[in-house]
Length: 266
Image (cartoon, rainbow, N blue to C red; front, side):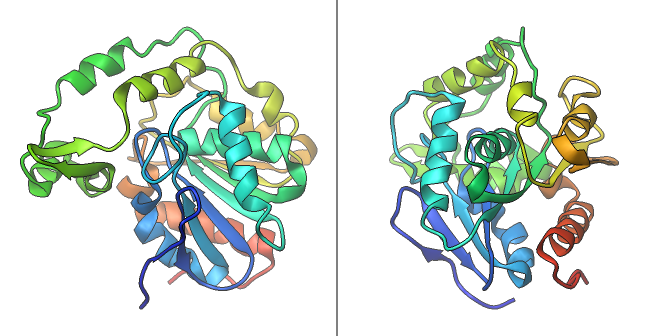
């Protein structure tokens, strides 16, 4: 598809393109809206596709509190600017924010796609993450260096860094990221799942690091039988980047159903 990225200066909201019902893409921890570029372009036949930088990420607002309900309120503030309820599509942290927004602001959300996030991760800590992040060769010397280091997810991570005088650094602040993720180890989010009143698709990577069985339970516990769950074989946490055609096929079929539109997938 042809077209260029349109940047809207409103707390990190960008518009990729398309016409019709709003579709809003929510990225994961340390990401930003532009990581969704390839997905967004494929989804334009289904509606007007937007991406939102979460608080503390990309062009999003800075400063906490880093509580999930605050992130959901940020999403809801954007959704109120649309003329009709939106479809929320989220990866990891963005999936959590999507279903919490649907639960707390039900009139603003038409449907939810959640990619590889579990509602109850209590007991987990960010200590493992700290060691992993400390192992990064920061600053990266070039974008090619970023791609090389992250391998299969290199195209994803080049969207998450910015150039400074000494090289490339993660855009988001690591202390902020640790605080955001620490909340997930202290509380569960099942009560929000049980308040979702719209269709929800849970997409799980076969090699997920999330607690076993929870993503299937997530779909099963959406009231009214509105939840669906699939496992994408061979994929890890970033399903939309690691198995894009399978991911897009599932999302496009879901959108075709909930929006009452033809299935445009090639």
